[in-house]
Image 1 (spheres, rainbow, N blue to C red):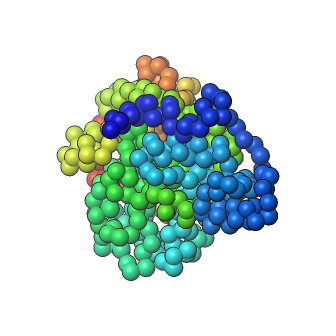
Image 2: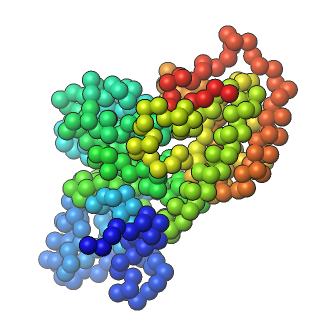
Length: 415
């Protein structure tokens, strides 16, 4: 038996098994919106097969790009291999991917109830709470999943590490509590390099591929790794709703996967250095980063192979200091999103988590950092000068300060 390939090798070679037969070395891009039909009967059979979630028949046609595209399919195969999944399904955005997951596991199967573990990415939280998809939602903590399950529960939504406070939830325990209810894990922060939720029993591992998978801030996409059966259900939703990924985006993502392990290792190393510096800064009241508490419950060591490159911090100067810092950095770009080669700084409560109800919204003194590939010492210098710019802002009285984040977060360390 051939030994399993190292993840670094899978990242480079995944999804490319057909290239030699095509006589090419670099990934090809198929931009066709429509495809020739061999005849009416086989064309019709092909259409039906793909419109209901299947793959193109060997003797048929891909028919139409809303149903199938080979460039997208190669990226899906590569991501599935990295996630140890049978298949994956790509979408035009991470939110399109989450929408398809919710629809496929609620309305499509007659189960309207969703259990959502907070904290979650603000867009996901808002989508679930908006009622737009007809789902009824129970929000809970990780240890409350089991007691939140109902007979009409069709899905459990979990994100770990969570956005923006880097909470670590025990995936295997959530799956145990959920029983027969499928669990989707938002794996965006960890990536397949550091975490494989399907190995821990999750039904689906979802990514905002816009972030680390692409890695260069030039493509918006989402992808869900899962079983072939689940993939058929998701492809059916994609075919009907049209939430497809453009072939050029799929090409950029597939190319991005080749450097994902290298990028993640260096960005993680930069993050560790910056975290150690932040812990001792008087301007910082609290740092959120996986493992800072020593992983007392052993969750991090059981399910992750690293701590990632995202950091959250709570500023002693409250919202005023946080606001000043976001505009005072030079190397950290003040922008939403994350996971790219350049470093970003963002205020979650005002932006990505603005639609979230106040009781679940991050505190106003919290900033989120996405650490890139710049020199770590240069990034630290940039933060230092931004902190200095905020130093003249008086710390508000205790009664006027933003509500501190819970000390229950895994990885929260008071500075």
